[in-house]
Image 1 (spheres, one colour):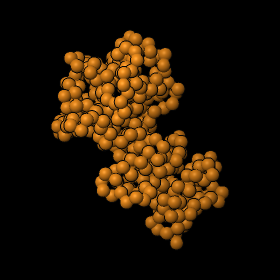
Image 2 (cartoon, one colour):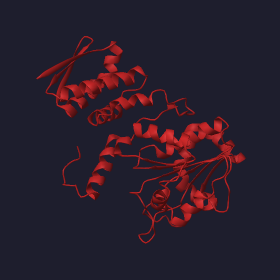
Image 3 (tube, rainbow, N blue to C red):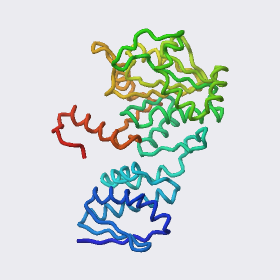
Image 4 (spheres, rainbow, N blue to C red):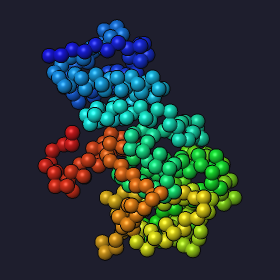
Length: 325
C-alpha cells in the first residue's frame, strides 16, 4: 500500500476539486482504484501503485485548471484522467490563456482539449484546414469563433458558411416557403453558432448587409471568394465534384475551414464522399492542414464519448456486447 498527501491552497480550491458530494474524486477513485479523503487542507490518496501516483497527477492537473480559473466539471475530470493514462497531462498547460473569442453573452470560448487547441492553431497557421472527427468535438463551433475573431480584427471582410443540403436518412418531402425557407433547416447549426457569437439582432444586420452569408453549397458555384473566412460544414456529404468546386472558390486573403465526420456519410452508397478523397489528395500540399479529432475531444455529455467509442469498437470488430468502460 502507498499513501501520498497533497496540500490544498484554500478551502475553495478543495471544494472545487472534490466537486459537489465528492463527485470529482469519486470518478478519480474509480478510475485508478484508490481512496481519496481530506483532513483539513490536506488530501490523502491511499492505494496500490501506480494508481496512487496517477491519481496524484490527476489531482494536480485539476488544481492547475482551478488556478487558471477553469471550472472543474465532470468532463474536465474525465479528460484529465485520459491525459494521465496516456502520459500527456503536461500538454494541458499549452491550453492556458488561449481565448478564441468572447460570445455575445460574455462567455470566453476556449479550446477544452489538446485536440481542439491543435485545431485552432492549425486554422490560424494555414490557409485551408480540414477538421475531421466525431460529433461533439467542436469542429464547427470553434471554426465559427475563429471566423468571428478574424472579422472583428478586420483580417477578413466577410464570413461565409455553407453546407451541402443532404438529408440525414429521413425524407423531408416538400418543405413550404421560398428557396431560402427550404434550405434553412439544413443550415440551422450554423445559425445557432453565429447567434451565440453576435446575438440575433447584430447577426441579422450583418446578414442583411451581406457581410455574413449562410447558404447551401450549391450557391458557391462560379464565385471567387476574396477577403473571406469560409467554412464548409458536414463536408462528408459532398460529392467529389462539389468538393473540388468548393476548394477552387478560394480567393486572395481568405481562409477556408472544412469540417466533417466520415462515419456519418448520408450520400447514396454509389456516391463517393468528396471529403475522403480530398483528405487523400491534399495530405502533402503545403499550407493545407488536417486535424483529426478522437472521442477524447468530445465536449458534449460524457455518454457521447461512450457512444462514439462503442461504435468505433463495433466497426473495428472489437465489440463483445459488454458496456463501454
